[in-house]
Structures are given as C-alpha cells and as structure tokens.
Length: 158
Length: 158
DNA sequence: CCATCTGTAACAAGATAGGTTACATGTCTT
DNA sequence: AAGACATGTAACCTATCTTGTTACAGATGG
Image (cartoon, rainbow over all chains, first blue to last red; front, side, top):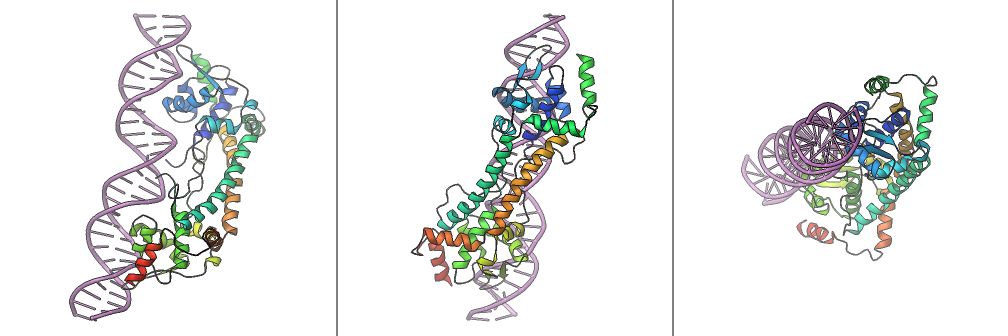
C-alpha cells in the first residue's frame, strides 16, 4: 500500500450519503469507492461506533447518516478511523540510549509535533459540510457527478 | 517497517562523525545505528552524491564529513536521502473523476500542504550543528555517551 | 422460508524500509 | 605481487500495514 486513504474515502462517502435519499448498502458504497463491500463495512464500523452513521441489518438495511455534515469535522472522522499515523518518517527506536540520538529525535520530534498540531487544527475547524459546499461551488447546477449512475441504480432497485 | 527512519539515522551518525577524529567505517557506523554495514552504505550513498560526506575505499578507508555541520541543514539531508514521503495518509487515487472526491482531496490536500510547508521550513532553518549544540547542553562534560566504546574501539584498532 | 443485509474472521496481495548474503572493485601494507 | 581491508552494489528475504477477497454466521423483512 502506498498511503492510508481511509480518511479521504470516508469523507467522500459521507457526502454522497448526505445526498442519498435513502440508506446505502455496503455494496453501493463500495462501487463509489471502487473497492469491496467488506472494506466498506470494516472502515465504516469506526464511524458507527462513534455515532456518525447508523447501520441496519437485514432486508432493506444499509447505512445512513446519524447527524448533519455540519456537525462532523475532519478530526472527528480521523479519530473514528482509529487515529492512524500521520507521518511516514520518524525515529528508528522509541527510547534511544544514545544521547546524540535523543537530541536528534527531540529536534525532529519538535518539528513533527508542530506540523501535526497544524494539521489537526485544520481537521478540527473544517466540517464535512464545508467540503460539500466546495463541491456545490464546482457543480452549481447540482447535476450529475461520476456516481450519478449509482444513485440511479439504487433508485431503480429500491 | 513502521516508519522511515533514514533522516533520523543520518543526522545521528553525522554528529558522531563530526566528533570522530578519523574516518569511520561502515561497520563502525552500523554498530552505532544497530544495523548492517550494507544498510549504512546504501543510505550514505545519497549523502555522498550530494557532497556532504566523502568515502574512501580500501585499507584505511571509510567515511568522513565533507563540510561542517553548520553548513548542513535537515532539509539538505532529507533531500539527499531522496525526499521520501512525509505523510502516511493521502487520497486513494491521484486524479479522481468524481467531483465530490476531488473536493475532498483538494481540502485535505490544502491542509497537508500547509503542514508540509511548515515541516520543511523547520528542516530548512535547522542545521545539524544546532542539534549537536543541544546534545552538548545535555552533556556539558563532553564525556561518554552510549557510543563511547565504539570510539575507543576505533581508536585502538586505528 | 428465503432473499437481502451487516458483522467478522481469515488469508492473500502490494508496497516499502530494512536486514542479509555474496561478490566485484579499489587501496594500502608488507 | 599478495593479501587484508573497505566501499559499491545486486539480489533476495523479512516485517509491517493498508487493502482486497472469500467464507460464513447472524439479523431482518416479505
């Protein structure tokens, strides 16, 4: 794998769910994300545990939003997927004995902590509704997007 | 592997080399880093190509600094090891067709770019000499550290 | 009862840093 | 010239983590 795309994927799908008139099945969502229904259920489980979405089993079941997109920040979703590591670089060991190594890791750690704080602050202050608004500005007609066919399919089968 | 530790390791070893009165072999350096001599040569090759260290083959050969630590920034070393990815998170595809996905990735990308800019700015303004100075403040007597035995061993064999 | 969902375990795939072995090449000492 | 000592590098394995996939148990509604 190259990079962890769960945050991006969950934001993506939550916006679609907001525009969806009914519950979306894992299968439907998996097609939006070009992946597998099990991957969807696995990742969305965290969002359900944190109360951002609900899932219903059985016939007619599926996923739906549990609150408005303006009530969910990027930080919320980041935490709901388990706060995966943000950085791909870091020290070689956690608690080095060598004092030189300690000094190196302290300096590097300071820079990383600053960058992390900035990133999480952005996550904290941006809601998913903000992103949806960006989308609406790009597509003011409110018309089709790449997943329009999936919505139609869902409409036909429902 | 969990995280890329090449930057941390190279900073660490460059400070030791600065305190080393003679060339250090890959074998000696590998013991400092608790790794293998081939890994050392592989990683240091980038630093050599960028002119921060020199290597000599054959009897009595090894590695030495090509310039003062105050003339090398963390950014220099980051670039010399090949600018590996800084973040572990990111979009799922590079150029999504879905406009919702584009909006998500744009917003996420903005936050990541801000954090990256901050991090690289820190890297740019910190020299390895700054880190060495931090070490000296922790160890004002200038005495032993965990690698003292390796220095002594090098002294005995040289 | 059965089709349709989610929930979850189990395992394979793909990517990448790091570890290891093997060997070619260069260089100093004797 | 021979041999010890170093780097240079290819080749392959290992560890780790996200993602993909298969299989199946359990819940739900017609």
